[in-house]
Image (tube, helix red, strand yellow):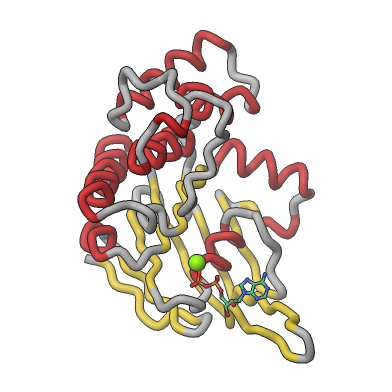
Length: 227
Ligand SMILES: Nc1ncnc2c1ncn2[C@@H]1O[C@H](COP(=O)(O)OP(=O)(O)O)[C@@H](O)[C@H]1O
Ligand SMILES: [Mg+2]
C-alpha cells in the first residue's frame, strides 16, 4: 500500500478579484522507502502540495490519503494525531524552539506522544548520534551552526520513526558543503533505516541523490522519473 496517495488535488487561493490556481489536479503516489524530490520553479506549487500531504492545509478539491486514510474524512483531532504519529517535518528555516536544547527539541514530539522518560531519552540519544550531534545535546539553537540546527530539525523529524518525512527546501539556507552532508545523512537514513522522504528543492545535490524526481510546473505534474 502507498504511504501517500494524492488524487486530482486542487488548491485555489482567492486573491482579490481573481483566483490563484496553486495546484491543478495533481495525482501522486509515494511508496514506502522512496526518496523523492519535488522540483519546479518558484510558485509551481511545491509548498502547497507538501502542506496538503502533511495535513497542514485543506484542498479546494481532490483527496489526500495517508496510510489508507483519507484526510478529509478525518476530524481535525485525528489529523493532528496522524501528523504526530506518522509524519515528520523539516522546514527551510529549521523552526527549532530557541529556549530548548538540541536534546529537548528532538524530544518534544516524543513527549507529545506520551512516551515514557527512559525510552524517550534512549531514542533521542540514538537519533542525535545518528545525525552526528553526539556531545551537542545541551546546546541551544543559537549555539549551533545552521547545518547543525538543521540536523537537530532532522533528528526531531525522525525521532518518532515516522512513516514519511516531508522536507520543504531543507538545504536552502545552507552552504553547498553543509547541504551535501545533510543530503548524505538523509540518504543514509533512507537506505539504512527505511525512512521515506519527500523533499521540495532546487538544490542540485538533493536532486542528484534522489531515486525519483517529480517536476511540478504551474500546479501540475510535468514529469515523474524513477532511476
Ligand atoms: N496563502 C496564499 N495565498 C495566496 N496565494 C498563495 C498562498 N500560498 C501560495 N500561494 C500561491 O500559490 C502558488 C504556489 O505557491 P507555492 O506552493 O508556495 O509554490 P512553490 O513552493 O513551488 O514556490 C504561487 O502562485 C503562490 O503565490
Ligand atoms: Mg515553496
